[in-house]
Amino acid sequence: MHSDAIKKIMDNAPTGAGIETLNLIHASGKCIEFWCSYHHMNHNGYYDDHSGHCVTVKPDLQFDISIRVNGRNRNDIKDYLGDVFQEWLMMEEK
Picture 1: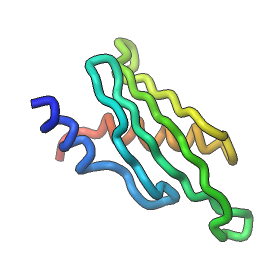
Picture 2: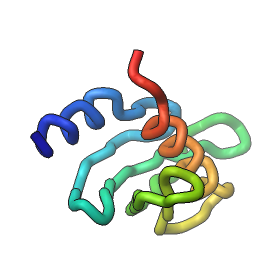
Picture 3: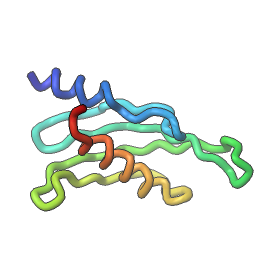
């Protein structure tokens, strides 16, 4: 049952738009942790750097989930990734 829910989550995982890899690294009743790699662009629109991020998602009574993004914060990428994960994990089933 638990593995079916995780598979369903991962089937709709965001890809593209700079997110190169996204892997589930831990899942428990307290949190889910993901590892993602982001490919940054420079001001000319060329890819020029990578950063890796651990994204921890926990249940939150006030906001449904709480998301923490670790790693280097080049170009405020942590805010962007937090928004992407929030939208992805809170989207309703179609």
